[in-house]
Length: 152
Ligand code: HEC
Image (cartoon, rainbow, N blue to C red; front, side, top):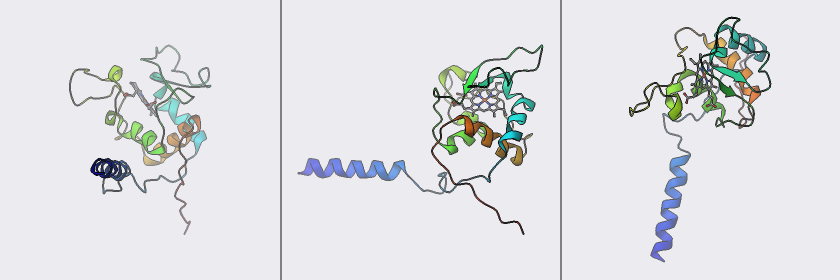
C-alpha cells in the first residue's frame, strides 16, 4: 500500500512539474499573426539559406549565387524535432537554449553555444513574426492561437 502511495505521489509531482505555469514558463506566450510571404523573403534576405534548406523548397530558397552554403540543416518536413510554436520561436531568438551535440561551437564545454547566427540585435519583431509564420507552415506544430489586436 505504501509503495502504491509513493508511486502515485511521484507520478503527480512529475505531472505538476512538467506543465509548470511558473513565471518563467512560456505559458500564455503568443506573437501576433505574421505574413508568411514576407517571411519567406526574409529567409533569403537574412541569409538563413547559408545554413538551412526548407523541405520541399530546396530549389527555390538558395544561398546567393557564388556563395557556398556553410552547412545544411533542413527545416520543416517530417524529420524534425521541433514540436511546438514556443520551441520554434526559441530556436530563432535563443538558438543556444538547446543545441545538438554536432552543432556546438565547442562540443566539450557544459554551456553549449549554437553555431546558428544570432539575429536579435538586427531583426525587428515584425520580421521575426513573419519568419515564424513562414517556417511554421513548413512544420506540423501543436496549434497555437495568435493574439488578435484591435485596430483603434
Ligand atoms: C551559420 C549557420 C546558421 C544560420 C545563418 C542560421 N541558422 Fe538556424 N540553425 C543552425 C544550426 C546549426 C541549427 C541546429 C540547431 C542547433 O544549434 O542544435 C539551427 C536550427 C534552426 C532551427 C531549429 C531547427 C530544429 O529542427 O531544431 C530553426 C527554426 C532555425 N535554425 C531558423 C533559422 C532562421 C529563421 C535563420 C535566419 C534568420 C537561421 N536559422 C539562420 C545554423 C544556422
